Image (cartoon, rainbow, N blue to C red; front, top):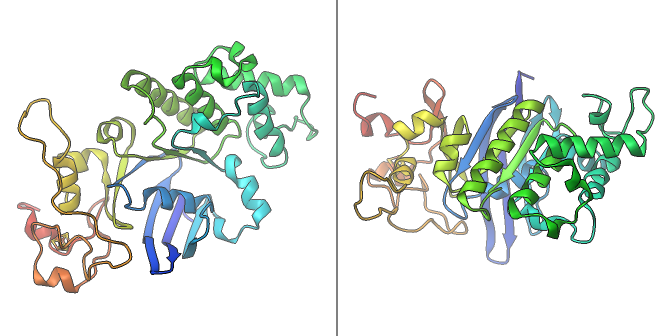
Length: 343
Ligand code: SF4
């Protein structure tokens, strides 16, 4: 495989309902380099969360991964057994979920919760320091209780919390502190990929920035790639390096974050960026006309054509594949050159 940390090829995830298959993720492909920060944006229901849950193989019935390949550092994720997959979660791919701070056990001290994950994956890793080898010491034996305690305190310090937090219960912590504990858990086994699904949506903006700064710092320390899922374009602009825009289960544009904010190429990405309020322009807020399509009865051709201001008859007839239209810029629109002057 190449130097890409993560490769996703032609991934399809459908929810099977009595009325037919809901194509929540449809033929999605993208790559992530080691340590890269990648944002996934799009309206609610565009398939962002389903996509990242599929990377973790955590799709529940009636959802099903129909086809596609996921490679993490050359490892074929879809070919792993259930037990191998369980070990890969947290050790290889860690999740900081929406409202994950509410998933902390209210009757268990923070230290215990941090250590449980490490002990559970005691045989999962060969990298990092003795602490980071998930409960194994330098001679390959299990780490002592004292060493695990020290690692838990070290993790808390890394995310900007006092080591004393280890002895506390979740109800004694603020929302921002709890979310930092969740980040400490996510990096405890030095994963190759951290999935952060709207990790700060329940926090106020000041704490939000502190938590995102913490995530960036520890992500760089452990060298993990990050997929940040969210609606907050400001957060995306500050945190990620590339953005993937999803519409109705498909990626319609993948571009470096600077480029997509300066000059989005796909008409949907353009409308999405235009809908971000600006401090300078106090005009009425602009939304995207129309509604996202039903994923049960999808439009023909380009799925965006019923809402697209540039649509032609050909758009309704012809499906659009993601193509590299400029270096490092991938767009699913056959009219991209004619829409943009000086392309
Ligand atoms: Fe709009 Fe046509 Fe491009 Fe689709 S293919 S985004 S409808 S111009």
